[in-house]
Image (cartoon, rainbow, N blue to C red; front, top):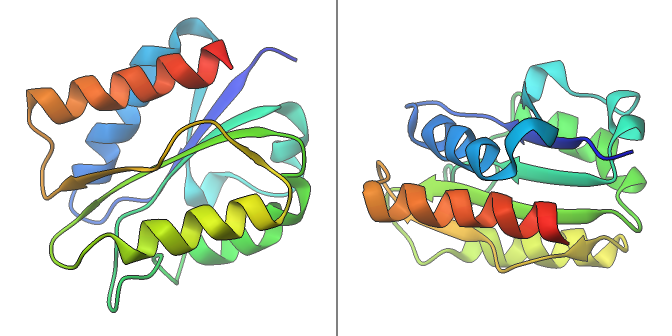
Length: 139
């Protein structure tokens, strides 16, 4: 089972840009999913997963598509290698800290600190996302 899932939700396109860069870093072993396409059956095919979601509202995960999907699959993350990424407009990154804690609490192996990028990623941000994908592949 060498395939790696990149699962994301994006409202403005910023997190989608990051997801594409993470996928590029992973290479041919990666498979891209929008949150609405991923479920608790699909997760069984992957032992490594990159999740991407921007900060919404009061620094929380998007709650109409991403959060319901994540709630369904998080119980199956135990023992899997995981990285997290997303964009934000304001705040301090609190949503990423809470998300990291939630992933570790279910027994997943958090490969790196979550990658947060303010608004649209520039070339440096996209390079960081690509490196995040490489680190997940190497884990």
